Image (cartoon, rainbow, N blue to C red; front, side, top):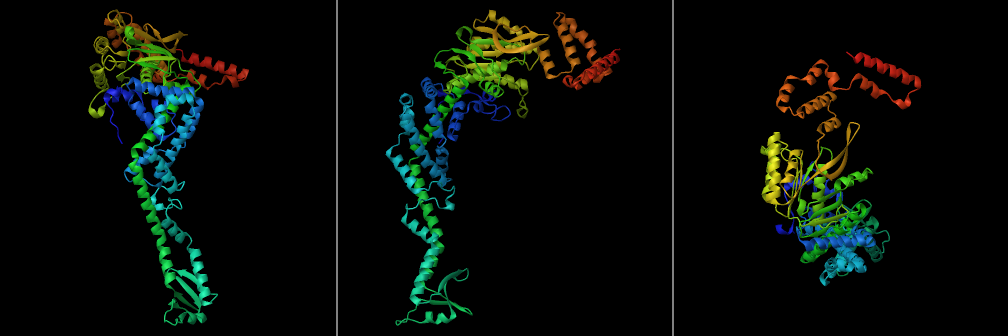
Length: 626
């Protein structure tokens, strides 16, 4: 049944933050690519649901968090126990789902078998934990939950006696009650399943009684079961006894045979025809009794099921930590947020499949620098860095190890993320309006214990409007909210705030320039970025060469310090569009020289062919010259 959770016991995460961080679903609605997909190593369906509920409600109770972390630590330190546990969990059915179906009269015999097998597996798992001295103390609470009380043990024995090993899903299929559980049911089944033997036995009796060796019992859809003898023997069965009675009742006379019945044969026929119906009715009655018995013990059964799902999550998170070299975070009631060599769990998972390495980064949002202003070019990894810190905070407070070499996190009461932009046309809200609504929620609700990540605030409006809003937001986060925050921006003017805001620290994404190109190092370093490299990103995206050239010219003019007259000159002088009008193909697409070069495969050319291509390329260049 649903369980009410106090809001004070869990980290508050609003819908916009859940969506932007892609906790259980990506922006496109897919599970693949989400945090849940990246960390899910659970074996059972109940474990998978438990892990999803963990992500939906990270804890803020220190004792509860550290209890979960200790369980994960136990399975990390005991790989053999972890392997045995996960192997046994594979055989543990989903008791929660079975119990839910039975509680609303939607269950069947297979659900009862799932309860039976789940209780059996819980005993095996308990014995495994009990045999490990190092795990007994840490897993003390699960051990207590798995220890069966007498009534549960009695239920388990009853289900083992009552049910066949592999019962059908539906009661109407029958055959799910074990032999020797009900004498009446066994008799009916014997009658149903051994009707041929019973008929043959009765036929032998009649042959002896009458002395007619060729007497036989047959069946058709009109008469049912009947005794058949040749016509010459028919008179013998018509003779009455001295008391006037005759057990053989004439039914039909044909040319060569006569047919009879007896009270015993008629009764046997009735029993055979109703045996299947009666046996199914008895099985359904027994099923109802077993369901009632299970439902009286629903609470302890549910407790065992939840314990198995908890062990599944703990061992799964331990397997994740072992595979990806995660570390146990230190969680306390301070305001620290210090990560060393932290990594994005989802991106790292994707890169590993491509045999690539993720570039780790440090983050320290301590009291001295609780607000980081992050600058740097697009594509350099700002958004990834922002998200990875938020995701690590969530992982830590669900009781998981985290992707870092060390982590010290003071409890976070609320997590806010405003990363990415999209409109909400159905509600009449533009991209910028959505951005402002989400930002307003952050500024109005964030506390000293909150973690906030903001990306490109103010970019959806005019430059000076956007800069003004971003400036005011930084000041509010620092002076009013006083929360731990990461603020990514392209407004380099904001870096001047370090002189007036004591806890503001500037960092940037490292970039290297080489032969006119830039190389993104994906490393966060102290200091500010001097350029945004937006034109270079446009070049990487495939903007036409003429557009790139013109953009570079405009940028130089705007940065020359003559902005007052620059805009007027730009409006009067439109060389890009003049060139496009004169030769649009040349401006927008690859040149003939570029096409020819792309067709050449140097490794397959002979020396003569290479020389011929060289002369051809020279002729193309001459033709292109004015």
